[in-house]
Length: 405
Image (cartoon, rainbow, N blue to C red; front, side, top):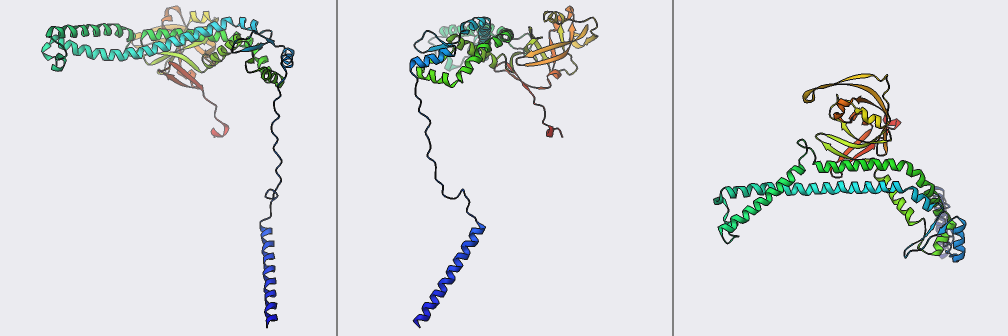
């Protein structure tokens, strides 16, 4: 009996063992062990090599072998410069002057804009205050009891109210002419003048930038190459944090160049508004600063420019230029005989329109100014910002091939 039971247990154990082996075989077939899942030895991480500073003499030799010379140290700086550093800085004198003039003009326009906001607020308070005080002066019996209670006598009250009235009159007489434009809705003349000065300074800076940029790059590129040189970097680090490439003068040139490319050579240009139309600063034929009105309102209008402006920009009106008759209706009814010409380039900051058709206006029509129809700018998104007085151009990206289907 006992032997029979032991035999049965062995038999059942063998069955379970065989069953387990079969399950393991099936699981292995269905879910093979991946090599990545197998335990792997992790290689020890190697720390970056510790920086070993060069001896001062060795570090200086590295820099001098690269053509660098140490300038006189200051409490915060030890400049290492190339031989042309001072010469290039001198060549950029006119550019720095133009950048400083632009900075001053931009600040003056922004300060005037901020002052206009304050003046408008002051005037908005002075006008109702004047009306209130004028009523008291004309009809003293309408003065509220709480106002009269502030004074010891009727005479003292009337004197104080009259002085207050005179102050409001002076404020109104001072601010109304300053804030009133030529026409209803026009901007204040003082702000328009400040922005016009900013436009001129902006375009003069662009004119100074063209010749200055290649001169600047003559020195900036070698300095950038040296900054990426591992030996130079190690030598400067060995000598201490105060040591750097480039003179303080060239740092000044770098800042002026960066500021110019972020402002005058960007897609944002100064503008002012007259009525419903905006006028922006532009550069005609890459030579002549101009103020040009953008007419995006009148679809039947045209682009025109005074002949004297074309002459100043070196654009010649050929004898075969087609004659065009321009008829004006309404309050400015007149007929103007002009010629159709093509302006090679018209620049707005970094953007340039090429081969733009204009009508050359004779001298007796130069009062019409310089105008560009909005259709010429159809490839640009335009946003006039009346807080910063910057007209923002963004060139539209051409549609991708799959977007045109």
